[in-house]
Image (tube, rainbow, N blue to C red):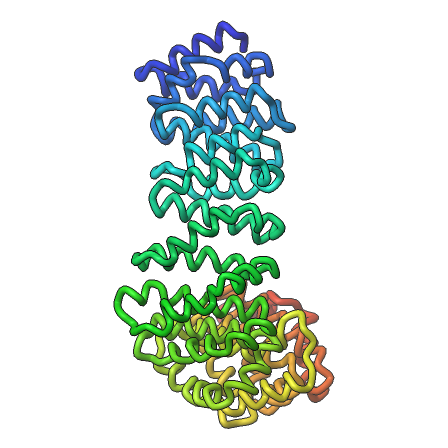
Length: 488
């Protein structure tokens, strides 16, 4: 395709009646477009007129045409392409701004650079837009901002956007806190943005408070962020503002994120947090009451987070013994009376409590704690409760039961309890329902493989398990049919 043919197509693109056919024609001739012709297309006034009038489907087709070629011709970026994107981002119509954002995203996702000015324009024009691809925009900013984050112009633009409404401000907070997760050294230069977030947390708007608290929880993933949260006394402020007050219908919007805020701190920095803020765990236990099923489910999630680390288990065992005993004794009844959706979350909570602490080593103290908790919960020395859950035909519950089994048999007592459970091996080795869900079948195979390596089990048990492992996760028995001729 030469320039004259391209200009003819561009003019027809700008005309509503010929737009669709011209767009299809352009896409069909895309292979014949060389770089010089492509650069002419990017500068065409008719192209921008088309973008301003095109509908969503036409934008999608145009993005394939323009951005696929951009990646082909400019894998390392290009000032010409940058100017095209920047012109889109500054266009009066938001739909064209969105199209420019797509172009920036295409380059960023393929590790191609975009200019500083492009990033600044995304902050200035896309962050405040109502009808914007929020996830796309935040992904572009999170990936492209770190190398230029300390640029004064970047910080000025981010702060300038804070003048808009709470939705826009939360976008800024989310982008910044996500960047701080991987680049905590930038904590010092984002003071004005974090101060704005804290000011929003003090406002009498429960939806805004909930959103901000959820975003600020991301800071707990690093030592620098945790120090910042402690330095501004946010743990106490959350307790005073949201925990110690009477629960109201409006406060229920904030309480779930307050629970997750404390649980995340206990999960990420268990030693420091649990020692300094033990009352937060009392708050989590208080919400495990079945009076409010939604809060109860979240409290179970959070208790699992607290008890998933070795330090968390020791803290619960030493400092919350009475509450843990009450919680564990009530658990079978709660599990039995709950819906299937909640059942999965409750089983996941117990799985975390029974786990060996992830990458942490399992010492004798952790083994003793988990055995005591399991026996308190079931009042027996077998895995009958786990087997009952495994028999449930619903894949989500069956998968949750297998994860619980996997966590339990990491302990020597769990292996002995498995062996003490009548028919558990037979049910586990049965392939009757394996084809119902591939993911469940694969995970069951992994659990059986783990059990087959356990030296605690009797040899006849491990032999049967090893035979299953040798056959594979999706082994099918051959069926032989005998046909008798003559109908005899």
